[in-house]
Image (cartoon, rainbow, N blue to C red; front, side):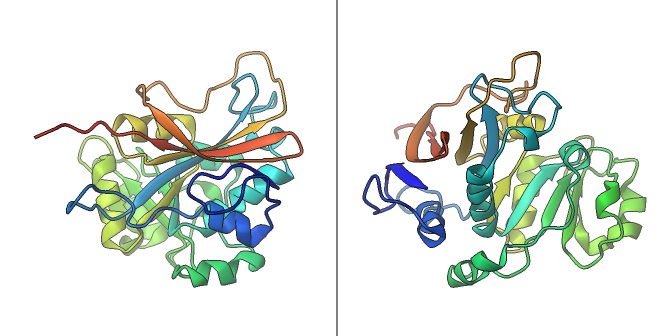
Length: 262
């Protein structure tokens, strides 16, 4: 994989990156957020793939038909760099998610950054329904975030265990409360893989720090979802890293937050 824009990675442009160098290039900043004496712990970034003409899925409605080995390498690195992965229940059902694990080749790099071996999957569900592929996981590998009035809340507590259910908000799911509860558990380096609706909501709530995008060398055509749902609001971004392999371009874009003077 070839580095095109180095940003603050400290790696020379046009360097061929091995797995360890790619892991270093995608390291989140530390401290993650803040200005002056005010520092907020944590970093939330998304990872999304899009075709060159802007489709979030291939013609079959699945992301798997537009990603490739280059995208998968970055996909694995981003997961291995995170405390937890946050995904909407609809995307989990559509893509067939199962409990997560870190590839063996990245475990040592993950430990070197002080991250635990476990990588919980946080399910976002307004109904509080556990997707079929995740039911019965009471070991903390699956967490459910849902509002208090979710019709499936009681069943989910029975299925996953009460300690693995995060009640966030009353009538609707409160994303700020979700992030706060995850931080309270020590899960501060967070990755969301969408889908578009969840990503749009995170952006609208002002919670996304960084967008990691893969632009796949495909044209899909037709009517397909974009990577950011209707709830998303305009946001200014700054390119901080760009890599390429097999005509696939992958990059990091920081969200520029507006600051106000005294």
